[in-house]
Image 1: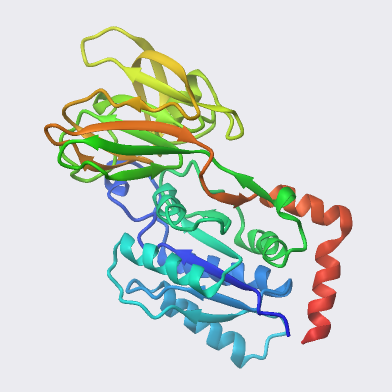
Image 2: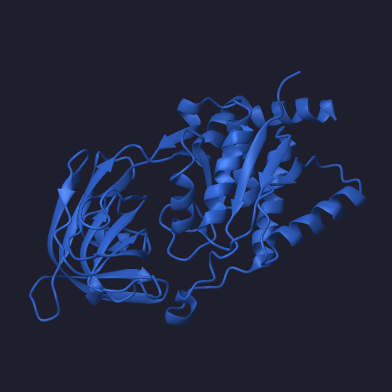
Length: 354
C-alpha cells in the first residue's frame, strides 16, 4: 500500500501584525483570514490526492479556527475531499522557535512539500531548515518580496500536483539564491545567518523594533534580486538596476550619509512609505565571492529585520549562492498541467478512490 501523501503547513500567526502597522500604512492581516487561507489550501490539496497535512498549534486562534472549520466540514458530510489534518505535538513559544521545531518535525514525518503562509521573515526561518523539501509560498506578511501573493486554493492545486509527483520537479520547482553571512572573528565567531532577499548593514546601533524603516539608517545593501515593482528594501535596487530571480548575480549597493553627495533614488521601502535615498555605488554581486562587511558599529538586518548588534571586534563576511530553497512555480506547474489535463485526470482518480 503506498504511503500517504503528506504536506506540511506553516502559518505564522504573527505575520502581518508587526510594528510597521504603527509606523507605516501597512494593512493588518487578520487571524481569521489566515485560517481561511489554510482551509482554501486544504481544498486545493485534497481534491488532487494529498492525504495528510501536518501543521502547528498557536495561541492566537489560527489553529482553533481551523479546527472549527474541520468539524463543520465533517458534520455536513461535504462532498469535497480534504486531507486529514494533524497538529504537531510541541511546546508553543510564540517565537521563531516554533517554526524551526515544526519544520524539523515535518521533515522527520516525510512531508513532500511545505506550504508557508507568512512574510519574508517566515520564509527565511523555514528555508534555514527545510533542506531539499520544496516550499509553496503564500504571502501574509508586510514587506513581501519572496513569497507569492496569490489565491490559496490555486496554490493548493499546484502544491498537490508537485507533492504527488504528477508534475515533474524539473518543471514545477525553481532553485532560489540566498545570501550567507558568517562571523569570522570576534565574540560571535562561527555565527552564520541567511537571507532570501536582502542583507542590510544599518547605522542604527540597536535592534529595537527590528524593522528598517528610516532610509538614513541604510549604509550597505546586498540583494539576491531586485524587482522594479517590489516593496521593501529590495525596491531600492529595483529602482536603479532591476535583477531577476533567475539572474546569475545579485546587487551590492552603498549609500551616502546625511550631508554627503550621491545619486538620489526614490523607492517604496514600506507600504505607504516612498522614501528618497542617496546611493554612492551599485555593483553586481557575483555568486561565490566572500566579501567583508566593512563596518564597526550598527546592526545587521536580514530580509528587512534587524537581528544582530555588531560588537567590538566582530568581523563578518557575506556571499551569494544558489543553495536557497526550492520553491513551487505555481503558474508553470498549472500551465504544464493544463497542457496535459492533469487536474481533471488526477481529480477523477481521487474521486473514484473515495
